[in-house]
Amino acid sequence: MTLSAKPIRNALPRPGRQTLTCVLSIITLSIALPSHAQDTVTILHTNDFHSRVEPISKYDSPCSAEDNQAGECFGGYARLVTAVADARKRNPDALLFDGGDQFQGSLFYTHYKGKVAAEIMNTLQYDGMTVGNHEFDDGPVVLREFIDSVDFPVVMSNADVSQEPALANKIMKSTVVEKAGQKYGIIGLTPEDTDELASPGKNITFSDPVAAVQGEVDELTAQGIKRIVVLSHSGYEVDKQVAAGTTGVDVIVGGHTNTYLSNSAENAAGPYPTMVGNTAIVQAYAYGKYVGELSVTFNDDGELLTANGEPISIDGSIKEDEQIVARVTELAEPLEGIRNRVVAETAAMIEGNREICRVQECEMGNLVADALLDRVKNQGISIAIMNSGGLRASIDEGEVTMGEVLTVLPFQNTLSTFQITGADVIAALENGVSQVEEVKGRFPQVAGLTFTWDASKPANEGRILEVKVEVDGQMQPIDPDALYGVVSNNYVRSGGDGYSVFANNAKNAYDFGPNVEDVVSEYLAAHAPYKPVLQGRITRQ
Image (cartoon, rainbow, N blue to C red):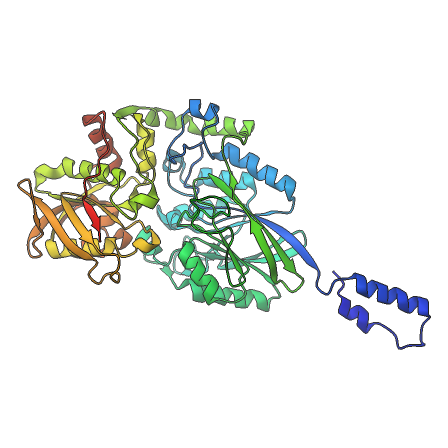
């Protein structure tokens, strides 16, 4: 236990009871000790890894062996192991946390589900993680298998899993982690709209993050835990709201919005850390491109005194761990035949960056929407609507492999067709632009129609100003009362990303078409070399 000055002063005897030498020695000891002792801890953190087991390019897509050898690639399991080991050499007692979404994003997840993620995280010796929405993509049972396989706590405070047999008593709302003699309260957060974003099932309910966090803070502080860290997969803006709306939270390790925070990079969304009151908020982009390294100093009362740091770039300068390279090669063997098959060629890079596709028309969105519509246009379908959250990467110029297509479209969604009124199409587009400020994946990429929207209007209150549909080769105003044939993917048709109007009002729905990735790869092959297009389909006022 660290001695404070106060008990030493209280221990001073009354004058005359001890020798002057003794009094002076005690006074000297009292002055030498600070009024509040301090200590500093390093928090290492990742988020939104999305099964990027192998190195990736600057576009977040697969990186060739040649480019990796030339030092032009980023991330990957083998570089992360080296980077975390180096960080621990600098700070042996560092904590390592994850902000969720380890699942989904490459063939490693498609083939192994959560098994490889568990292996990687156990190898890196994480101290805790929260549940991302993509951890629910294959339902509660796959998440349960992952939790049973990892050596660290998984926390989620704003969800009630008590009615879900696979997860009841398996996910804690919060826990206490001890490192170097200090105890840290760890609280988890997942998106409140996870039921719209993934497949958690009907037995799990999600709640307000602010109230959930404060409830856990109160319980932890009642136990004498003074240092509180929230692991949040709720996004940068929500994290700021949580920091402002709660008391007692020292650090929020974020995720979900793939936000890059930095004190030096021009493209950063904010400073690292972003301070809201006395709470330090951090996030480290995504896909294993960075590991956050935050240095936090606390006093004896658990108060955060300083917080500073910068994300570590996991670039080609970081040597890959040779044993892990061998392990990744072993894991990849069953995947080679699928992903190395060349399916097409592109004349230029196809832009699929989420920061673009989730706020405006983008090249990847046009490609996928065009491919969907082309596949079923002879079935009376005239409109395609694709959620941008389903687009996960760009594709480089040149040969296109099936592995690249699967990196863009990793969810194994099927093509869905249905009929719906023009009024419901407008309502769907209203939903699509309702959360653009938060860069949410519901933003619609389209084919067979154009629309104009006004970001200055309140969400879901008339942001869509004009919609035109293609009729006999001409663009005409949409008829609210007419019935239109629409194609999307089964996730959106079933109400995912807030498209409940499709789930509730669609007629003659068929959700069991071919896989979207197969439709897109065949479309690319038929149009090789494919030339990316932007055509003014979406206009923002």
